[in-house]
Image 1 (cartoon, rainbow, N blue to C red):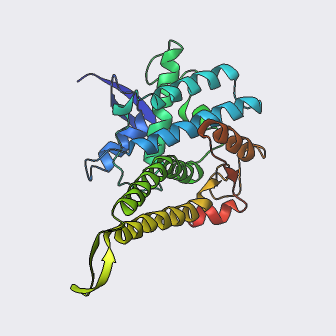
Image 2 (image 1 turned 180 degrees about the vertical axis):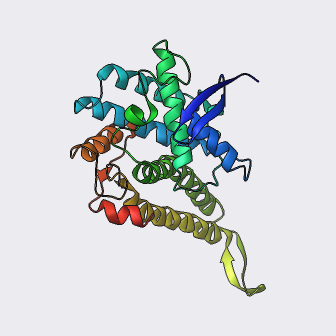
Image 3 (image 1 turned 135 degrees about the horizontal axis):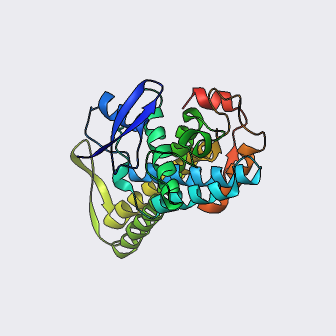
Length: 269
């Protein structure tokens, strides 16, 4: 296999020549050969949504060249379209709060963005994974944000499935309203009950499960994005958290707001 040489703070790293990942990802592959699993696809989609929103906001704030923001967003869009999925190779079991997987995302986006502009893999010109893709961000705010977004995106389909199943049981309840059977408790026949009542019970259980999920999902709409390393927002524009949440809300179709207390949110994920 052909390789290219990349350099980081620890020295030179051999990376497969055609890989869209870089030195940090390659070190993670060597450091964490644990489960053989790959990152969850929806989590990667959520990360791509967040990176695309961040690039747009940083350009809007005058912190990132609009042309660079455009190719980062284009690369993120390709991930959302299902491309480059084989380039996310870091084991989900890893140290460092998800830093290695986060860098996998940054490096793939940077390399693809540079390729779109006619650059070579591994050169990181003009788009750099840290200086541009990760501008104003940290693993400690982007990783929990991607987790929350992935759950909220998944929940849309889950809600629909639960409602559909609850309706199906409700229809069976009406259909079987006159069919009497033995109600059972403690593994023994107890008192009469109709099969319609049993089905109505199942329907009600599913409806309550949906309500509990809605309650649990409520706090996930509050994002710690912009808190950067420890929740204080160091190296981040003060308008960035609000604007990213607005951008993501438009993109995903549900309301998202900046955390009232990012420090607490960072510490309690």
